[in-house]
Image 1 (tube, rainbow, N blue to C red):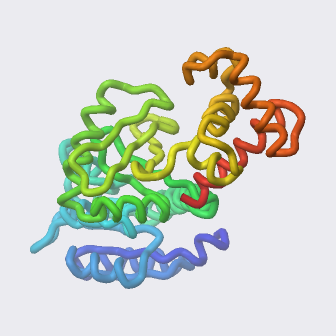
Image 2 (image 1 turned 180 degrees about the vertical axis):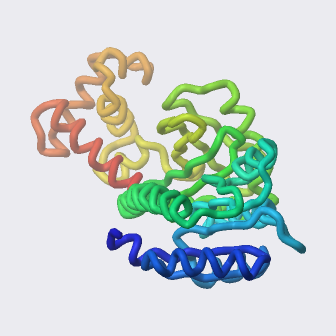
Length: 305
């Protein structure tokens, strides 16, 4: 048993006291802490107060079944990353698919075998630890990122992304539904990494840009539509004129002097003159050093935006 398993908190949800007792005893014998609930609403309340590492969820329960309970868990940003393992007597393939579609990560058929249950839990505890470590690193780096599936539904987001979503009131599930539809239509076209989409009909302007894709998971960068442009940030932070900031912005983005001149509709000679002034203001003697300073300023502005 690893230290992580010893610290694991498991929530078992089943309307059968006998089934709960068996699961509780097996997990406690393995050194895990166990919470129990007899129905879905109670499970949601417990998860809100004491966020478990894994939820074992019976599919068929009165009042609120396991499928609906799982859907509500996944709609809650604070609880959506908890792995859900379904426990059920159902053996039909459509029920397995239904459990996975609503957010479950695994499926066990009753009667539950303690050795198989423990093996599955250990696998998902390890996966959850790796995932949470990655999310924690992104959180600390101040990245404004969110993950969505191919339906545009949110898997997770960094705290900075949650803050920006809240500005557009997209922390409300009913308002996020329209954004999910926009994302779904966009992702169906298989856009490449680096492509962006301006979200429409929002109370606050937002854009999303594709950072990476892994299977059916898309990592998106959330961009504040009211945030200053790159050249404006350089103008403010480095004390440059408007044209100087535009020149160094494009140079920092890898453009040659001639390419920057074409983009800014000026002559290459004018670009060179602006660069001379930029070198003097930044106290450097070449375009590489100037571009490096500009890139650091832009990177910092992204981290603290």
